[in-house]
Image 1: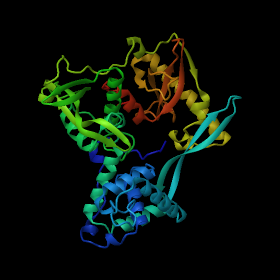
Image 2: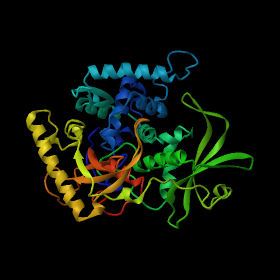
Image 3: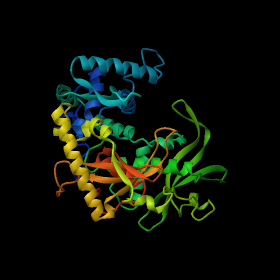
Image 4: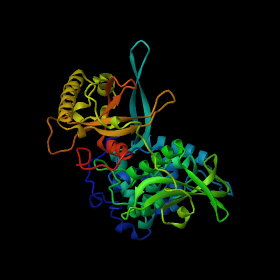
Length: 442
């Protein structure tokens, strides 16, 4: 988990393209930049431009550099006359230059500490690579390089970052998806007004809540066999119900068309192409039978899943809460020494007690989210979210984290399983329902 800088939720306070590129209005030598210079600029631009503290993988960097016109042939084309682009070669070349930049202390790898529990109960730790981030020296050097770039190039690379970060994962597993961000922007305008960006952290992706919502809504519709297909005007089409409405309460549907030839996304052949979104009154949607033409996704097995049952036993997974994902805690609680561990436990126990008292006062304190299993042995289910105020009692400030309360399948108990950032909690909860004003959406 990467800790991001807190920012205001309002777009006016999340400026994109705030770099001063007036110096770069004339050509000042961007064609003379080495490949590793371009790589450093691509890595540093999000941090310098929108203050997004996200490590980037070599694959993400490859996509951004390929999408930026000035750098589309920087990696992966070799010296061959045909200069055919080779993605695998590009990755190897980027890896080489990242190691070079790291040796110069301009970039550094970012890792996540992962705990595994052995059968005898002993804990072992490993590190999972998250990608690379620029160092302070790297940011300074990238700033000087940016002064040599044309404003159009900076804008082009910024757009490449936003596009590459917008990942409609489950739709891409079903259909060819191109220009995902270009399809989300008109949907945002078509649907009822909502804030689809994070409130407490900055991301490269402009609408992380909307893209996550659509991806998982589609997957749920697919799992529940709620995709509708027909053939109209000689073309097969497929739609799914997004669960979103226009301001005039028209349903909005995602639309796929049969690929004229087998579409390819990476190494996978796909029979469908994603075309975007349409209102229920659109001729394409009107060609489908049924009312509605495609049913919306559902998540609840019983209404009682939405309400905390005080008759169940409440347990706490201390090992996971205290020892894993320490970077989610306030800075003074992240240490690995004995004192920090004792501080984490004391504050966590106090915060959980406070959350349960709030729940006793108002059952709506528990906000439902839907859990997607990570393995075939697990099962999807509704979990509940409670606020954790780790710095002390409740104040006018937002909660520090959201406590995930997981129900046991036997319905005999709950477990305080993990704690997640508020932005993640809001994103997960939005999948089930549009949220009213509460501690998660103050």
